[in-house]
Amino acid sequence: MKIIVTGGAGFIGSNFVYYELKNSEDEIICYDKLTYAGNLENLKYAEDNPRFKFICGDISNRDEVYRLFEFDAPDIVVNFAAESHVDRSIEDPELFLRTNIIGTSILLDACKKYGVKRFHQVSTDEVYGDLPLDRPDLFFTEKTNLHTSSPYSASKASADLLVQAYQRTYQIPATISRCSNNYGPYHFPEKLIPLMIINALNNKKLPVYGTGENVRDWLYVEDHCAAIDLIIRKGKVGEVYNIGGHNEKTNLEVVKTILKILGKGEDLIEFVTDRKGHDQRYAIDPTKIKTELGWTPKTKFDDGIKKTVDWYLENKNWWEKIISGEYQNYYAKMYGNR
Ligand code: NAD
Ligand code: TYD
Image (cartoon, rainbow, N blue to C red; front, side, top):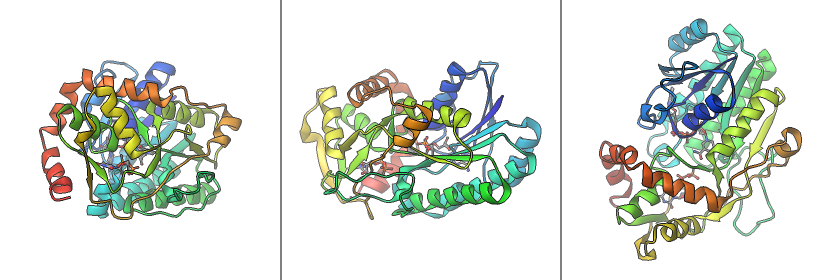
């Protein structure tokens, strides 16, 4: 089969490309605009694989997308392509609407025009909004109402609604997965875990928003890839699957764990102004994907976070190139006067 992986040069997409090259016989075509978050170096071990091809293109460009479907005739499309950072969406929502909503609608139109066996939308638990900190008994299920907080999550929720509308109206064979926060190799250093690892390695302050009590439910990226692989092959058309491994941690716990692994002092922690509209807690109930598809996460947080820190230690070149460029302007703008 031929699988188009949109956004395959980003964090989760590149891990998914490697997962499929290793675990399937399928042909993988990565279609990616190479925004600031897309990086061909993420795909350097796939480059020479005869089952892999890279095409530079934008999911919100209809002509380009139609050409892609016409010439490459995919069986399956997995849509990772998105603007993915909440803080950037608070600064500049419009690009999020164009890529995450219009881009998804154009991919769906292409599926309708050319036909596919499966369109899979990689969504997020952030479409459910947040849970209160004092109700640890509550979890997001697939039936939880969509209730978004940031322009990012609103754009992802809109895309989910479009996928469901195209499935019902035009019988596009679509599935959706909503995963909790991922961590692992190739994670762009604007996000909590890689940012904190790199700052600690450079003996720079670790900017924790607010009190650091917000809770995220962390999943090692390879477990997310395995879940998506199962859904596109065995999942039922029209269904939504939550993905998460019951790994809830406060941000402060995560940051302290990283400092401990690196042997650095907690004096590096700096509490800074909170994020606007900051979601309190995310927590996934993964019962459906466990019982219906037999998925369970393999990597425990304690092992995954050590593997991740090791990866950043071993791949200094990768992140040094990133943080020496445009990233410096981003960092000054977001953290300069925080
Ligand atoms: P990322 O920002 O690392 O990568 C996004 C990729 O999409 C980049 O390679 C970028 O170049 C590409 N892209 C952006 N706009 C594009 C466009 N218009 N056309 C084609 N390509 C474009 O993001 P990520 O963290 O890997 O997330 C991937 C997907 O998974 C996103 O849809 C995100 O909403 C979802 N998700 C992420 C997490 C997480 O913890 N990172 C959790 C759940 C769901
Ligand atoms: P992030 O990695 O941006 O993911 P998301 O907002 O999609 O969950 O942030 C994870 C948590 O870490 C979130 O509660 C915000 C917090 N955070 C900080 O405290 N400091 C930072 O510098 C960043 C980037 C995030």
